[in-house]
Length: 189
Image (cartoon, rainbow, N blue to C red; front, top):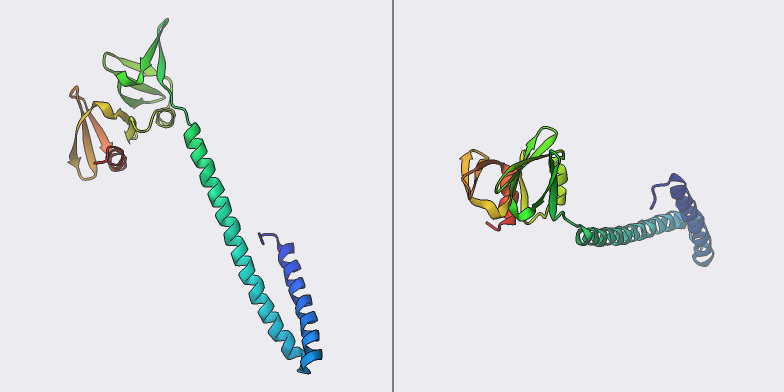
């Protein structure tokens, strides 16, 4: 609100002029020294202005915060997740249902998609899949892995702050500490 320096000077000028007017009137009424009354009114109006500034700033800040939260909620409600993935193999285009995908593995500029029957290679980023897959079903457990929670059989502590996620088909995937925490939170463990 007061980020602009000219606004600060305007408020200070207004404060001084208002204090002079009130001081002059009080001096006429009370017959006390003008300088003494001016100093008191300047301090009182300064404190009053500062309190109003704080209250308005908090009020405006809280309104903006609430508006931002409402927009985030709308964005979350409007977020659409992919329902299937198309993968081109030669001249053929395969459509993969998410329920058939066990996990995704980073593979350079590509992502390997491990389904129940086959491994596919897709030219896409892990970040894309992380943000466009349903977060309750697919969790990024490591910078190299996104796992379908429906295929998890067990989670074991491997080393300090490292975990192994064992899938129902026997595959084992590394999980970082942050990935383990997200997995634990999502699965309510």
